[in-house]
Length: 130
Image 1 (cartoon, rainbow, N blue to C red):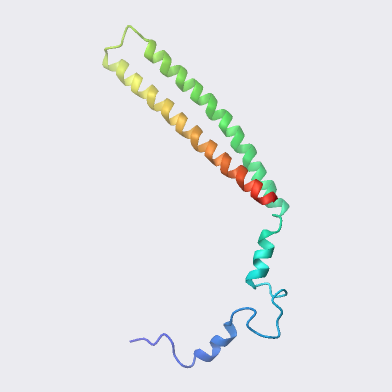
Image 2: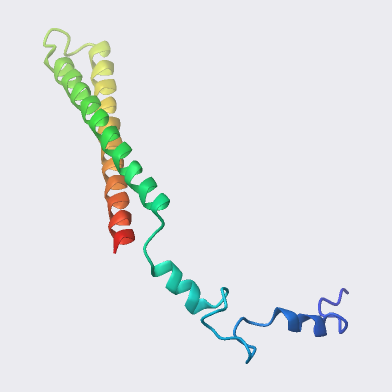
């Protein structure tokens, strides 16, 4: 059986003591101190991160516009296939109708997911600016 805690290694573990455990260090000057890390994290986000979030929002808005156009076209196609009165009972019409419905539903789902992503990105930017 392997001994995972050999006595020779135990004294060397003292050098990995928790930050701030030594009395000579002040907690504010220790970069690994939890309070210091929390303070840094709560300060305003760096400009690069905030700018990247804003760029993402701009791209998502552009993508939503494209998805809205795609959904409009899919709904127009679905309406056109549904209005084809001559071929309502044929298998080809039923397959075309099914495909048009699937295309419209896929476009609607993609638009919905993009809108959720936009909401999350806007929330992240609002949280970063505070």
